[in-house]
Image (cartoon, rainbow, N blue to C red; front, side, top):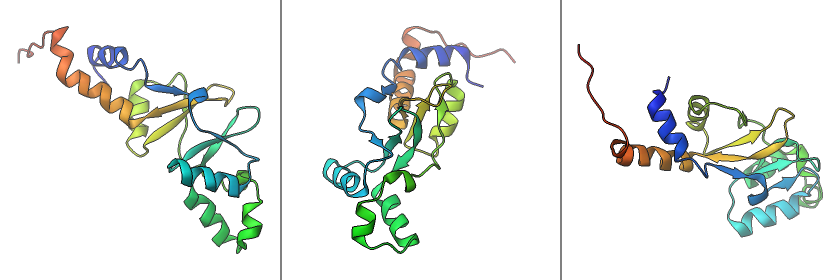
Length: 155
């Protein structure tokens, strides 16, 4: 359980912790693999969220996911490049609801560099990055005593 004062402080510094879907590179599950591989390679993205045309979250995709799918299914390059990425999506990264607590978010971010955020209808809302949480924690460590006094408990 995070102390109420710490949580309030961190949340006040997380004004940009959620990167909205509109500001992110995302792929539609019907995009073909060659298009996705080209964009991933040229833009330096290691992993990108995948959604449906209705903005429902499907998973994430990386070049290694595409290559693993090709190897697993013994596909020639020409076969792979024309396939929809919906078949190749990685669904191992846990999502978090847009109502998730700071505690739940931090626990899940230990294992992933970012977490996809979805609403109650599984519509993709955006991502929360480990970097944004670490920035907020850095502010806590450096600025907390500007607004609060820390007093040790009596034994």
